[in-house]
Image (cartoon, rainbow, N blue to C red; front, side):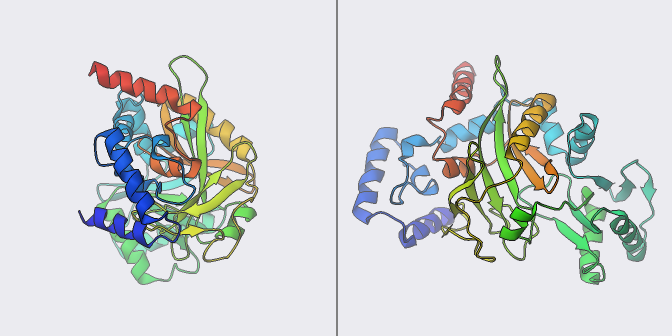
Length: 356
Protein backbone atom coordinates (compact mmCIF):
# COMPACT_ATOMS: atom_id res chain seq x y z
CA UNK A 1 0.00 0.00 0.00
CA UNK A 2 2.86 2.39 0.83
CA UNK A 3 4.43 1.80 -2.61
CA UNK A 4 1.11 2.42 -4.36
CA UNK A 5 0.61 5.68 -2.47
CA UNK A 6 4.17 6.77 -3.32
CA UNK A 7 3.67 6.06 -7.03
CA UNK A 8 0.39 7.98 -7.08
CA UNK A 9 2.02 10.94 -5.34
CA UNK A 10 4.81 10.97 -7.91
CA UNK A 11 2.31 10.77 -10.76
CA UNK A 12 0.30 13.70 -9.41
CA UNK A 13 3.44 15.81 -8.90
CA UNK A 14 4.94 14.97 -12.29
CA UNK A 15 5.15 18.16 -14.41
CA UNK A 16 4.83 16.03 -17.56
CA UNK A 17 1.49 14.47 -16.60
CA UNK A 18 -1.69 14.84 -18.60
CA UNK A 19 -4.67 16.73 -17.16
CA UNK A 20 -6.28 14.78 -14.32
CA UNK A 21 -9.57 14.36 -16.18
CA UNK A 22 -7.75 12.62 -19.05
CA UNK A 23 -5.78 10.41 -16.65
CA UNK A 24 -9.00 9.40 -14.91
CA UNK A 25 -10.70 8.66 -18.23
CA UNK A 26 -7.78 6.51 -19.42
CA UNK A 27 -7.60 4.57 -16.14
CA UNK A 28 -11.33 3.81 -16.33
CA UNK A 29 -11.00 2.77 -19.98
CA UNK A 30 -8.07 0.45 -19.23
CA UNK A 31 -9.86 -0.98 -16.20
CA UNK A 32 -12.78 -1.95 -18.43
CA UNK A 33 -10.48 -3.35 -21.13
CA UNK A 34 -8.35 -5.41 -18.74
CA UNK A 35 -11.11 -6.17 -16.21
CA UNK A 36 -8.72 -5.27 -13.41
CA UNK A 37 -6.97 -2.24 -11.94
CA UNK A 38 -4.26 -1.24 -14.47
CA UNK A 39 -1.29 -0.82 -12.11
CA UNK A 40 1.05 -0.64 -15.11
CA UNK A 41 -0.55 2.65 -16.21
CA UNK A 42 1.51 4.50 -13.61
CA UNK A 43 4.70 2.39 -13.62
CA UNK A 44 5.02 2.71 -17.43
CA UNK A 45 4.41 6.48 -17.30
CA UNK A 46 1.35 6.22 -19.56
CA UNK A 47 -0.02 9.24 -17.69
CA UNK A 48 2.58 11.50 -19.33
CA UNK A 49 1.80 13.68 -22.31
CA UNK A 50 2.83 11.97 -25.55
CA UNK A 51 3.49 8.61 -23.86
CA UNK A 52 2.59 5.32 -25.59
CA UNK A 53 -0.72 3.75 -24.59
CA UNK A 54 -0.82 0.97 -22.02
CA UNK A 55 -1.54 -1.63 -24.71
CA UNK A 56 2.08 -1.21 -25.86
CA UNK A 57 3.38 -2.73 -22.63
CA UNK A 58 3.61 -6.28 -21.33
CA UNK A 59 1.65 -6.80 -18.11
CA UNK A 60 3.40 -7.27 -14.77
CA UNK A 61 1.85 -10.72 -14.52
CA UNK A 62 3.25 -11.81 -17.89
CA UNK A 63 6.68 -10.39 -17.04
CA UNK A 64 6.68 -12.53 -13.90
CA UNK A 65 5.88 -15.61 -15.98
CA UNK A 66 8.62 -14.72 -18.49
CA UNK A 67 11.22 -14.40 -15.73
CA UNK A 68 10.24 -17.77 -14.23
CA UNK A 69 9.65 -19.59 -17.52
CA UNK A 70 11.09 -23.11 -17.63
CA UNK A 71 10.89 -23.00 -21.41
CA UNK A 72 13.19 -19.98 -21.62
CA UNK A 73 15.40 -20.69 -18.61
CA UNK A 74 16.93 -23.95 -17.40
CA UNK A 75 18.23 -24.54 -13.85
CA UNK A 76 21.71 -25.06 -15.30
CA UNK A 77 21.81 -21.79 -17.26
CA UNK A 78 20.23 -19.82 -14.41
CA UNK A 79 22.87 -21.06 -11.96
CA UNK A 80 25.62 -20.12 -14.39
CA UNK A 81 24.26 -16.59 -14.70
CA UNK A 82 23.55 -16.09 -11.00
CA UNK A 83 26.93 -17.34 -9.76
CA UNK A 84 29.33 -14.60 -10.87
CA UNK A 85 32.42 -16.73 -10.17
CA UNK A 86 31.08 -19.60 -12.25
CA UNK A 87 30.21 -17.12 -15.00
CA UNK A 88 33.77 -15.74 -14.95
CA UNK A 89 35.26 -19.21 -15.44
CA UNK A 90 32.66 -19.94 -18.13
CA UNK A 91 33.42 -16.69 -19.97
CA UNK A 92 37.16 -17.29 -19.82
CA UNK A 93 36.74 -20.85 -21.15
CA UNK A 94 34.64 -19.54 -24.04
CA UNK A 95 36.95 -16.60 -24.83
CA UNK A 96 34.30 -14.06 -23.86
CA UNK A 97 35.91 -10.83 -22.57
CA UNK A 98 34.82 -9.98 -19.04
CA UNK A 99 36.15 -8.34 -15.87
CA UNK A 100 39.18 -10.14 -14.40
CA UNK A 101 38.55 -11.86 -11.05
CA UNK A 102 41.62 -12.12 -8.79
CA UNK A 103 40.06 -13.62 -5.63
CA UNK A 104 36.85 -14.90 -4.09
CA UNK A 105 35.54 -15.82 -0.64
CA UNK A 106 33.54 -18.84 0.53
CA UNK A 107 32.41 -19.64 4.09
CA UNK A 108 34.76 -17.13 5.68
CA UNK A 109 37.81 -18.17 3.62
CA UNK A 110 39.45 -16.02 0.95
CA UNK A 111 40.97 -17.74 -2.09
CA UNK A 112 43.00 -16.51 -5.02
CA UNK A 113 41.48 -17.20 -8.43
CA UNK A 114 43.68 -20.30 -8.73
CA UNK A 115 42.12 -21.58 -5.47
CA UNK A 116 45.02 -20.90 -3.08
CA UNK A 117 43.97 -20.02 0.47
CA UNK A 118 44.79 -16.51 1.71
CA UNK A 119 45.69 -16.06 5.37
CA UNK A 120 43.46 -13.21 6.53
CA UNK A 121 43.28 -13.86 10.25
CA UNK A 122 43.71 -10.16 10.92
CA UNK A 123 42.59 -6.96 9.25
CA UNK A 124 46.18 -6.02 8.45
CA UNK A 125 46.81 -9.34 6.69
CA UNK A 126 43.66 -8.79 4.65
CA UNK A 127 44.75 -5.26 3.77
CA UNK A 128 48.15 -6.58 2.65
CA UNK A 129 46.46 -8.86 0.09
CA UNK A 130 44.28 -6.00 -1.15
CA UNK A 131 47.34 -3.77 -1.49
CA UNK A 132 49.18 -6.45 -3.47
CA UNK A 133 46.27 -7.06 -5.84
CA UNK A 134 45.67 -3.35 -6.24
CA UNK A 135 49.31 -2.72 -7.17
CA UNK A 136 49.28 -5.65 -9.61
CA UNK A 137 46.05 -4.55 -11.32
CA UNK A 138 46.10 -2.81 -14.68
CA UNK A 139 44.59 0.43 -13.37
CA UNK A 140 45.59 0.21 -9.67
CA UNK A 141 41.98 -0.22 -8.66
CA UNK A 142 39.78 -3.08 -7.40
CA UNK A 143 36.03 -3.67 -7.50
CA UNK A 144 34.70 -5.91 -4.73
CA UNK A 145 31.14 -7.22 -4.94
CA UNK A 146 28.85 -10.04 -3.75
CA UNK A 147 29.02 -13.18 -5.86
CA UNK A 148 25.27 -12.91 -6.38
CA UNK A 149 25.24 -9.14 -6.82
CA UNK A 150 21.71 -7.82 -7.34
CA UNK A 151 21.04 -4.21 -8.15
CA UNK A 152 24.57 -3.14 -7.28
CA UNK A 153 23.97 -3.64 -3.55
CA UNK A 154 27.08 -4.32 -1.46
CA UNK A 155 29.73 -3.28 -3.99
CA UNK A 156 32.95 -1.42 -3.14
CA UNK A 157 35.54 0.35 -5.27
CA UNK A 158 39.06 0.44 -3.86
CA UNK A 159 42.06 2.44 -5.05
CA UNK A 160 45.11 4.21 -3.66
CA UNK A 161 43.03 7.20 -2.53
CA UNK A 162 40.82 5.20 -0.15
CA UNK A 163 43.11 2.29 0.76
CA UNK A 164 43.96 4.09 4.02
CA UNK A 165 40.28 4.37 4.96
CA UNK A 166 40.20 1.93 7.89
CA UNK A 167 36.41 2.01 8.17
CA UNK A 168 36.08 1.05 4.50
CA UNK A 169 38.64 -1.76 4.77
CA UNK A 170 36.90 -3.02 7.91
CA UNK A 171 33.57 -3.05 6.08
CA UNK A 172 35.02 -4.98 3.13
CA UNK A 173 36.75 -7.39 5.52
CA UNK A 174 33.45 -8.08 7.29
CA UNK A 175 31.69 -8.75 3.99
CA UNK A 176 34.44 -11.11 2.81
CA UNK A 177 34.29 -13.10 6.04
CA UNK A 178 30.50 -13.35 6.11
CA UNK A 179 29.44 -13.52 2.46
CA UNK A 180 30.45 -14.91 -0.90
CA UNK A 181 32.42 -12.06 -2.46
CA UNK A 182 34.47 -11.46 -5.60
CA UNK A 183 37.55 -9.27 -5.93
CA UNK A 184 37.88 -7.97 -9.48
CA UNK A 185 40.15 -5.60 -11.29
CA UNK A 186 38.29 -2.35 -11.95
CA UNK A 187 37.29 -1.67 -15.53
CA UNK A 188 37.93 1.62 -17.29
CA UNK A 189 35.14 2.92 -19.50
CA UNK A 190 35.39 4.74 -22.81
CA UNK A 191 36.16 8.50 -22.53
CA UNK A 192 32.79 9.36 -24.11
CA UNK A 193 30.95 7.63 -21.27
CA UNK A 194 33.38 8.90 -18.64
CA UNK A 195 32.61 12.45 -19.74
CA UNK A 196 28.91 11.87 -19.06
CA UNK A 197 29.44 10.25 -15.64
CA UNK A 198 32.91 9.43 -14.26
CA UNK A 199 31.68 8.17 -10.88
CA UNK A 200 30.65 4.67 -12.00
CA UNK A 201 30.92 2.30 -14.93
CA UNK A 202 27.92 3.18 -17.11
CA UNK A 203 26.72 0.08 -18.91
CA UNK A 204 24.65 -0.91 -21.90
CA UNK A 205 21.69 -3.09 -20.91
CA UNK A 206 20.80 -5.20 -23.93
CA UNK A 207 18.51 -8.23 -24.05
CA UNK A 208 18.78 -11.24 -26.35
CA UNK A 209 16.45 -14.05 -27.35
CA UNK A 210 17.26 -17.49 -28.73
CA UNK A 211 14.26 -18.91 -30.68
CA UNK A 212 13.65 -22.65 -30.72
CA UNK A 213 14.24 -22.56 -34.45
CA UNK A 214 16.12 -19.58 -35.75
CA UNK A 215 19.03 -17.26 -35.18
CA UNK A 216 19.77 -15.60 -31.86
CA UNK A 217 18.61 -12.00 -31.92
CA UNK A 218 18.85 -8.78 -29.97
CA UNK A 219 15.58 -7.26 -28.77
CA UNK A 220 16.44 -3.72 -27.62
CA UNK A 221 18.86 -1.73 -25.49
CA UNK A 222 19.28 1.20 -23.16
CA UNK A 223 22.21 2.95 -21.51
CA UNK A 224 22.34 3.08 -17.71
CA UNK A 225 23.99 5.97 -15.90
CA UNK A 226 24.94 6.27 -12.24
CA UNK A 227 25.05 9.37 -10.09
CA UNK A 228 27.78 11.00 -8.03
CA UNK A 229 28.53 9.12 -4.83
CA UNK A 230 27.70 5.68 -6.24
CA UNK A 231 30.09 3.14 -7.76
CA UNK A 232 27.27 1.38 -9.66
CA UNK A 233 24.83 2.51 -12.35
CA UNK A 234 21.75 0.58 -11.24
CA UNK A 235 18.68 2.86 -11.54
CA UNK A 236 17.40 1.60 -8.20
CA UNK A 237 20.29 1.43 -5.77
CA UNK A 238 22.33 4.30 -7.25
CA UNK A 239 19.42 6.70 -7.93
CA UNK A 240 20.61 6.46 -11.50
CA UNK A 241 18.63 6.58 -14.71
CA UNK A 242 18.45 5.07 -18.19
CA UNK A 243 18.23 6.33 -21.77
CA UNK A 244 17.19 4.52 -24.93
CA UNK A 245 20.11 3.33 -27.06
CA UNK A 246 19.12 3.18 -30.72
CA UNK A 247 20.74 0.01 -32.07
CA UNK A 248 20.61 1.29 -35.65
CA UNK A 249 22.14 4.74 -35.16
CA UNK A 250 24.18 3.77 -32.04
CA UNK A 251 23.03 7.03 -30.45
CA UNK A 252 21.28 7.85 -27.20
CA UNK A 253 17.72 8.83 -27.97
CA UNK A 254 15.36 10.95 -25.91
CA UNK A 255 15.61 11.79 -22.23
CA UNK A 256 16.95 9.95 -19.22
CA UNK A 257 14.25 8.35 -17.07
CA UNK A 258 13.94 6.69 -13.68
CA UNK A 259 11.97 3.70 -12.46
CA UNK A 260 8.97 5.32 -10.74
CA UNK A 261 9.63 3.38 -7.53
CA UNK A 262 12.83 5.43 -7.18
CA UNK A 263 11.77 8.72 -8.76
CA UNK A 264 9.89 10.36 -11.61
CA UNK A 265 12.48 12.78 -12.91
CA UNK A 266 13.50 13.07 -16.53
CA UNK A 267 16.89 14.33 -17.66
CA UNK A 268 18.02 16.03 -20.87
CA UNK A 269 21.50 16.33 -19.33
CA UNK A 270 23.28 14.28 -16.69
CA UNK A 271 22.33 16.04 -13.43
CA UNK A 272 25.88 15.93 -12.01
CA UNK A 273 28.08 16.68 -15.02
CA UNK A 274 25.43 18.54 -17.08
CA UNK A 275 26.53 16.60 -20.15
CA UNK A 276 23.77 16.38 -22.81
CA UNK A 277 22.30 12.93 -23.47
CA UNK A 278 20.20 12.92 -26.63
CA UNK A 279 22.24 12.24 -29.76
CA UNK A 280 25.44 11.09 -28.04
CA UNK A 281 27.09 8.42 -30.20
CA UNK A 282 28.04 5.34 -28.19
CA UNK A 283 31.17 3.57 -29.50
CA UNK A 284 31.51 -0.17 -30.18
CA UNK A 285 27.76 -0.88 -30.27
CA UNK A 286 28.10 -3.30 -33.21
CA UNK A 287 30.84 -5.14 -31.33
CA UNK A 288 28.66 -5.21 -28.20
CA UNK A 289 25.83 -6.78 -30.19
CA UNK A 290 28.15 -9.43 -31.60
CA UNK A 291 29.46 -10.13 -28.10
CA UNK A 292 26.06 -10.69 -26.46
CA UNK A 293 24.85 -12.84 -29.34
CA UNK A 294 27.92 -15.06 -29.00
CA UNK A 295 27.53 -15.21 -25.22
CA UNK A 296 23.84 -16.14 -25.49
CA UNK A 297 24.64 -19.06 -27.76
CA UNK A 298 27.35 -20.24 -25.36
CA UNK A 299 25.42 -19.93 -22.09
CA UNK A 300 22.30 -21.64 -23.50
CA UNK A 301 19.73 -19.51 -21.73
CA UNK A 302 17.15 -18.30 -24.20
CA UNK A 303 16.26 -14.85 -22.81
CA UNK A 304 18.97 -12.79 -21.12
CA UNK A 305 19.51 -9.19 -20.11
CA UNK A 306 23.21 -8.41 -20.52
CA UNK A 307 25.25 -5.62 -18.92
CA UNK A 308 28.07 -4.50 -21.19
CA UNK A 309 30.93 -2.18 -20.32
CA UNK A 310 32.31 -0.17 -23.24
CA UNK A 311 36.05 0.24 -22.64
CA UNK A 312 38.49 2.30 -24.75
CA UNK A 313 39.40 -0.96 -26.52
CA UNK A 314 35.93 -2.45 -27.02
CA UNK A 315 33.07 -4.10 -25.11
CA UNK A 316 33.37 -6.41 -22.07
CA UNK A 317 30.57 -8.41 -20.48
CA UNK A 318 29.84 -7.53 -16.87
CA UNK A 319 27.10 -10.10 -16.35
CA UNK A 320 23.93 -11.65 -17.70
CA UNK A 321 20.57 -11.92 -15.94
CA UNK A 322 17.70 -14.29 -16.67
CA UNK A 323 15.30 -12.24 -14.52
CA UNK A 324 16.40 -8.84 -15.75
CA UNK A 325 14.39 -5.61 -15.44
CA UNK A 326 12.19 -5.88 -18.52
CA UNK A 327 10.14 -2.83 -17.52
CA UNK A 328 13.20 -0.55 -17.75
CA UNK A 329 13.87 -1.64 -21.32
CA UNK A 330 10.17 -1.38 -22.14
CA UNK A 331 9.96 2.21 -20.90
CA UNK A 332 13.10 3.17 -22.80
CA UNK A 333 11.85 1.63 -26.04
CA UNK A 334 8.12 2.36 -25.94
CA UNK A 335 6.92 -1.09 -24.90
CA UNK A 336 7.43 -4.71 -25.93
CA UNK A 337 3.83 -5.89 -26.40
CA UNK A 338 3.81 -5.07 -30.11
CA UNK A 339 7.57 -5.21 -30.74
CA UNK A 340 8.15 -7.66 -33.59
CA UNK A 341 11.32 -9.12 -32.10
CA UNK A 342 9.46 -9.95 -28.85
CA UNK A 343 6.39 -11.70 -30.24
CA UNK A 344 7.95 -15.18 -30.12
CA UNK A 345 8.76 -14.69 -26.44
CA UNK A 346 5.16 -13.81 -25.62
CA UNK A 347 3.79 -16.67 -27.70
CA UNK A 348 6.11 -19.24 -26.12
CA UNK A 349 5.29 -18.22 -22.57
CA UNK A 350 1.56 -18.01 -23.32
CA UNK A 351 1.69 -21.56 -24.69
CA UNK A 352 3.64 -22.70 -21.64
CA UNK A 353 0.93 -21.27 -19.38
CA UNK A 354 -1.88 -23.05 -21.23
CA UNK A 355 -0.03 -26.36 -20.92
CA UNK A 356 0.82 -26.04 -17.24
